[in-house]
Amino acid sequence: MTSSMASSSLSPATQLGSSRSAMLAMSRVMFVKPTRTNHQMVRKEKIGLRIACQATSIPADNVPDMEKRKTLNLLLVGALSLPTGFMLVPYATFFAPPGSGGGGGGTPAKDALGNDVVAAEWIKTHGPGDRTLTQGLKGDPTYLVVENDKTLATYGINAVCTHLGCVVPWNKAENKFLCPCHGSQYNAQGRVVRGPAPLSLALAHADIDEGGKVLFVPWVETDFRTGDAPWWS
Image (cartoon, rainbow, N blue to C red; front, side, top):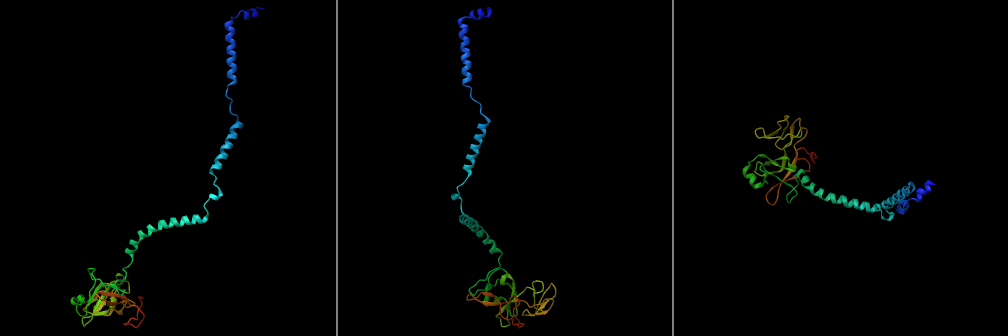
């Protein structure tokens, strides 16, 4: 009875405020954003994985075949080889032994200053029986021989000892080549006459070209000093 009276005793304004509060609470409940369920998250992850796989896959007809790969590899190797080859040419030229020159295919004889030997000029300054070193085939020291009639011999004598490679000097007093390293001796034509050297000194042809220059040409014929085949050929 008392509570009924209390409720009936509420003012119309209070009752209107309570009604508005109730309606506002109901609207908040209706517009609350639903939470994401585990099932929905898993589904989206699967969809994303499927899209990523499809994006990274390449159709079979777009994969380069083996022939195209080989062609590309050959082009790459060729592009790298050309500049490398051009870079190696100067080094190969530097380390290669002196090549043959002159019109007759021989190597020009060089004096101590590196100048080409001209036969007529050489005879003027080198007397009969002279044996003077020049630069010969492959850069080896080679004796030019002046004959007793003041003409150049048709052969040059390689000065490298056949024992251990020492340069053998000419001894005019003894008319021999005497090796200072181990005592080997060679006659005036370079034939071995005393060991331990096992072989005679190598020979080279000494030719004169049209310009009067002396050319050394490899000796491939029989050694006229021994009658044997040339061991150096």
